[in-house]
Every structure is written in C-alpha cells, then in structure tokens.
Image (cartoon, rainbow, N blue to C red; front, side, top):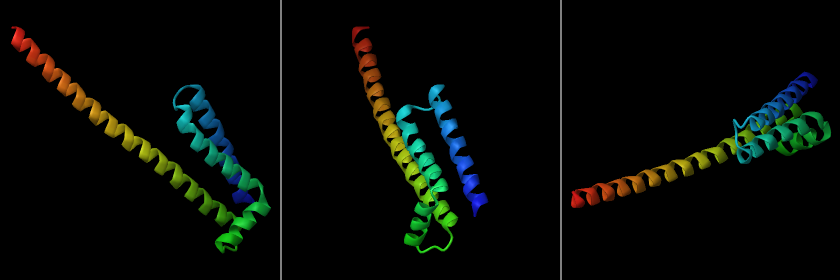
Amino acid sequence: MERLLNAMTVLSVVMLLLILFSVRRSHIRVEYSVSWLAASVILLIFSRWSSGLEWVARQLGLADPPLALVILMVCVFIVVIYRLSVRISDLKDANIAMAQRLAIVEFQLQDRNEQQG
C-alpha cells in the first residue's frame, strides 16, 4: 500500500513540474493548465493524506484505500479530458464558421473584381 502511495506522490510531483515547465515555456496556455494542476494537486493531497483517502475508500465501499485513490484519479482525469474535448469541439466549430466567412468574403471580392474588370 505504501509503495503505491509513494509512486502516486512521485507521479503527482512529476506532473506538477511538467505542467509548470510547459506553462513557463508557453507549450500550454495557462487556462488549460489549471485543470491539470488541480488534478495533480488532488493526487498529491490524497496520496499523502491517509485518513482522507480512507474516508473516500469507505464512501466508495472499498477495503483498499490506494484503490480508491486510483479510482478517484481516473474520475478526475476523465473530467479533465472531457473539459478539453468540449474546448476542442468549440474551437472546431469556430474554425468552420471562420472558414465559411472567409469563403463568403473571397466570393464577394471575386465578384467585385469581375464587375470592375
């Protein structure tokens, strides 16, 4: 049990450092890094706070607290991935709308050039 919790602690610290370095080097925007930072902080807190982890395990009906941590983290990461999927969908829709507006402007410009020439 302790080895898994130590591994989760190391994983969360590595994630925190990776996210902070990515933000610093502008590989990821700050607004997208917040959810990843929150997920890694939650992982860090529960990997070191055994009584809180035992409470979560009891609430989930599990006998093994590290299993509760793994389940909790899978749920947190699913929420993060869902949030990013929604954002990607919004960007795709905006990109399609922009391409359509550009096509209309190009058509109008081409029409105007034909009328003048």
